[in-house]
Amino acid sequence: MRPAPLLIALLALWGLSGLAVLFAGVPLLAWQSTGAGIALLAIGDALLLRRRETPQVSREIPEALPLGIERDVTLRVESMSRQRVDLFDLHPGAWPAQGLPQRLKLAPATASTFSYRLRPTARGDATFAGVQLRMASPLRLWRQSRIAGEPQRVRVYPNFAPLTKFALFSAEQASRLVGAHLKRRRGEGTDFNQMREYRVGDSLRQIDWKATSRSRKLISREYQDEKNQQLVMMVDTGRRMMAQEGELAHFDHVLNATLVVSYLALRQGDAVGLFASGGESRWVAPKRGMASIDTLLRASYSLQPQPVATDYLAAATELSVRQRKRSLVMLVTNVRDEDIEDLLAAVRLLQKRHLVCVASLRERALDEAMTEEVGDLPGAIRAGALARYLEQRTAAHDKLRSHRVMVLDVASEELPAALVERYLAVKRDGLL
Image 1 (cartoon, rainbow, N blue to C red):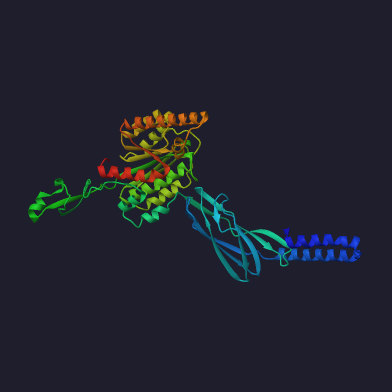
Image 2 (cartoon, rainbow, N blue to C red; image 1 turned 60 degrees about the vertical axis):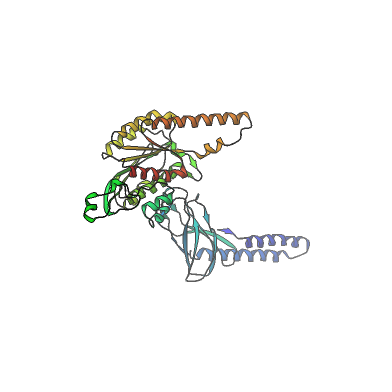
């Protein structure tokens, strides 16, 4: 409990009025009586505040939140007496919030409701410790802070917000929304779909001559991409993924992109699995059906990169044991020239059974630094070092390509479109 500005002002005025006792002949007893009256008022007001019931507070917020997306949090406050309170929700401290604190006028037996905006900036489990109330005494002489409401835990998942938008579109339309660009080859694929009349643009290979002779008009066979194939997202949880890109780490961008390509693959009828290795490990066997996206979310939301070197060969060995069926393995990491021999050995091991694609995240800051003007010797040294690093990175990628490995060299914001485009290209070309 702390004195309010009104009590401090009264005590200051009473203290200054003591000068009147010294110089104006005001009786000392009157000055002392005034002080005693202020003290009695303050004590009585403090007792009333201590006896005042704490308002009841409840919070409405989803148990699962997407990373980096603003959400409304609703607080409901109910009091048995008329009072004013200043309210601040004790959300996880680093999360930006708009609309806090709030000052409320509470009426007896009436609930007051308000909302504020909150943006999660870290994945994993998070806790709301309660709601802090600053209550005033009836005479406004004291203030007291109290914690109301129950602690509440929420889970912050990778950004699944785009998936709700994709649900409104076909898999092909959703792919375009992500930014993937593919030349559509109508009616071609590996699985037979249906017979239909010939259309302009159909190839001669599609014409079914027996059906054409029976119906006396051109009939084409229409094929579709093969379903029930296997996609395994292999994500690096080592130190390479700890680089920051804006508010999010590279690993957060990787998980967001993994969700997008996994969702679209499930929409295509394929089975999707997840293998995380390097720092923290996690394995989700490939499964079909849209319910699998929930399994992937629950398995990945608490994953965090660790400041350790990734053993690519050990990860490839473990995946080869776990995943026996031929799959498209998309390894997302940050390729450095010092890792290339270990990575190449891992890729060769995986290629014995699987089709491998390596997505190498590129730091946007390096590209921006290369465009800066050089005006002094330190700047020239820095530019030369950057150019050398990027040259070695390109050489590492070329070495992977020379061993028939699909390589994607992309910035974090380009990763979802690049992964989806390559996955659909593999499907289209029947490489699995």
